[in-house]
Each structure stands twice: as C-alpha cells, then as structure tokens.
Length: 206
Image (cartoon, rainbow, N blue to C red; front, side, top):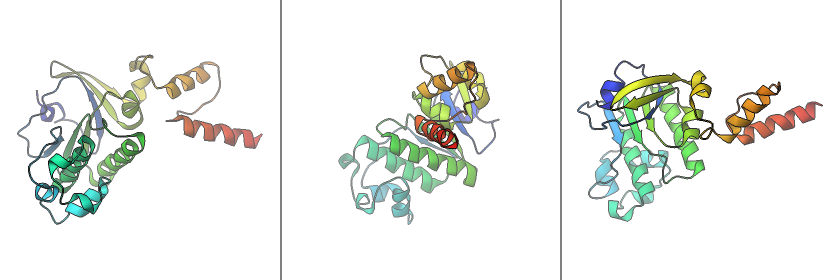
C-alpha cells in the first residue's frame, strides 16, 4: 500500500511520523517525496525556477550552489537541494524519508521548524520517517505504526508515554517521569536546556 492510501483519510496540516515498511512510490501528483537525492545537470537546471535562489536560502544553502553539479555535492547538500525543489513545487504532501540523517542537531531543529511552518501557515502535511525517537517525540502530531504496508496502530501525541520503550525513551522524558513518580511537579520540557532554565527560575524565586 502506498503512502497516499495510508494517509488519504487523515487531516491536512499535520506532521506525521511513520514506522514500518511503506511503498514510497506513488502516482499521486500532489506529493513531493524526498528519498532519491540524485539529479542530472546543475542545481539551477534541476530547480528550474525564478525562485531557485530564495528556495536555496530557505534550506541553508547560499547562491554559490546555484551553478554546482550534483556530483559536486555531499549527501547532505543533495538533500537540501531536493527539499528546495519540493518547496518550489508546493505540493500538499511532503514525505521526508530519513531526511534527518547527515545533519547536525542545529540543522535538524531548523528543518523541523520549517516543516512546522509549512503545516501551520500553508496547511501542508509532512510525513516524516526517522529512527531518531527524539525527533518523533518532540515534533510529530501523530505516530503511525505500519506492518506489511498496513497501519496497525495510530498513536496520538498524548499517548506516547504508553508506547515508547524505555530503552528508546529520551533521557529527558525518563527524568520527568521519575520526578512525577516522586510527586514533584515537572512540566514536559522537550530538552535539558529548557528544564535547566526552569530549575534556575525556581531557584531565583526562592
């Protein structure tokens, strides 16, 4: 079953996380699927749009990339160019197939913010495949579990605590759960930096 069929009854404007085997090939022309990063010719020829330079800036590439050939780019740069192409195409659905590989945390955070803007401001649906459970935990609205190309479970954000195995659970989440078990009121902070800021605020209040 192709991803178009799996998501056909889901609402737009979502970031979905999918785990399992899905056929990413689709005849649906309303999808941009970023899984094959190869193209022929230069970046300019591939993007083929007056918006080429502005779209490159949106994916953290400067104007010097416009005349570069695919063979001269790293995997990470090819992924960024592919995303620039998807932004130009402006399809309603964008599939990111393990897009976060090859990027550092700062870049991943930036692209997640960009995806959230696409869902909130432009009502596009983003489908995100990743092995990084922290990326899923912090950012998606719904997690779809797929087996043999069929959805076997749909897990909303508020139910993640019941699903994610403790071994794969982010350390910050394990800490928050422990604090709650001890009767301490700790909010669901997404990362240790936010938690530390909250602790310092409490200390200053005392």
